[in-house]
Image 1 (cartoon, rainbow, N blue to C red):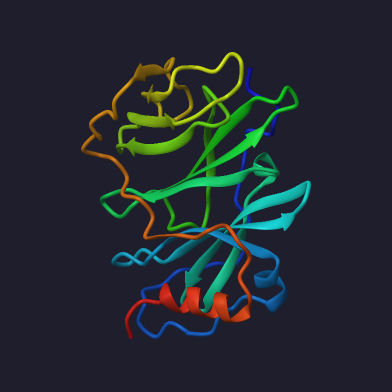
Image 2: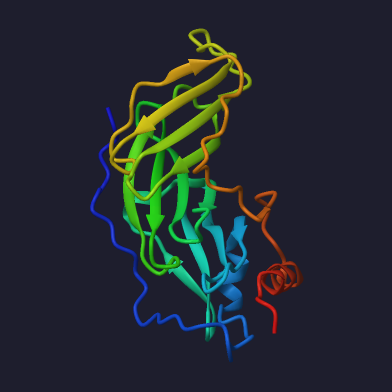
Length: 231
């Protein structure tokens, strides 16, 4: 059973307006305190008129939240995800091959110790997000291998299980889930010993994956500069 979390979500991005890259400010736009409290996970570079996005985590210990840094004409801005994603960590990020919709997947545990994936998407360059659905993992050790999703809402999620030492561990290999409604509902997992062929609408992997360690001021300066579009 999916854990009880608020399913209606809305991104807080008040006053954020995106315009083309010409004349974009180069300042960071993020307080030093925000950077010091943030850990980067994935980054997607600008693509045409689609801005750069960095998927981060804020907080530590028992209280943390996934966040997004979005590059706007006025610099970088912090996007806060809603309560539904509290105490979950980013495990995947991607942008549709046509440069449109952004996808992110977080992972969290319920009170019964089971692991769940929470799928979020944004069709507005990262300025607003919605929770698309949740999925119970076949094993807490399974990792996201690929995600494919087309504009009609038909998608495929592949989890890979390389090791699981629990007494009732499932078979090692790949587990394929299908959806016909954009991730709201998923089929029962189909097992495959070998890696399935990736669908043609598979989302490309992120442009950069971080080691999930906090960055110092110089590290953040370099990471943000790397995501800037050409002058």
